Image (cartoon, rainbow, N blue to C red; front, side):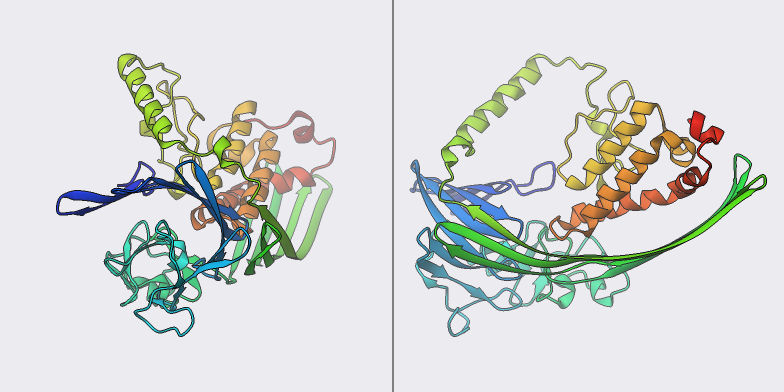
Length: 441
């Protein structure tokens, strides 16, 4: 079963009409119930470099494990909190399980496998009873290296491998992963992008012309997980991004004229050390209690049923997810209340929408709306620049998921129609009427 956000929420195995195994999924928390055994609550603890530890609760007691992954995110080793190896598992490039010592097929991992451990290849749920991998959006067959259902998306129209709708990760499983089952992601890679823009015209009697080009390349990343003295330590080394831009601008006003040309290049490299202390965690204080959550959901449902009056200022759910890039806030079609006014009560799951929310609230604060505000309202320049900086920064970072980076890339492009306004405003003399009075409409 899937929830309204298309995330997996529940699965069950049935034999002879009897449910033998059930599992609930809530982000980094899972509840596992096997017929005739006590329920287990599984907490996955991650740092910036990925999964580092797993904490399992059963009958009120907690067991701590250090989790070691390869560059694809596959769980290859579990140790106890003293660093003693407990279980090892290995996979070939396509996800077939093999002996971690000899690489022979048909052999499970080395050591005693915990019953709760279902995650394996690229962090996905393994289904050994069927020889498949549950990749959330689709099932995957590691023997054939093919999905069981066709892909809904063509992410890269320039790559012919992307037109085989059943292929896994462009037939390049050592470089890409597929966290959602619908869109591949990169595990260790680099790529680039080039954009150019030109415009000329007259703005309040001031003729101008400008051209702009920019290119950037993102990152290469490597991860290393180690365990030492009660700490699960994740180290990652990253070349985050390189950026080059060239822009020219000329304008004249009466007897005055101005022109400039700017070339800019930058490269950022960073090596970071992240320490995740697992032993001191007291999960009793914040763990999900499934029965409590279920009872509260039932109480809220009854309350809504008994008091089924709708306020005009309440969020209209029909207005969600209508915007660009599969979002609610990136673009001109923001969520509305029942009176047709913008409503920000909806909390998006994707972090990529938050720069757009801040941007739109800034527009609303000064009374700027629509294309007029984008092209001409000088009071929104700071909001426009902030949207670009935040969006481009998130897009350039390797630590956000593919959907977030896809959305923030789209948000960063919204700076383009505001460039004439920004450049012209900054090129005017300090005492020009536009700077003194400002343009709002």
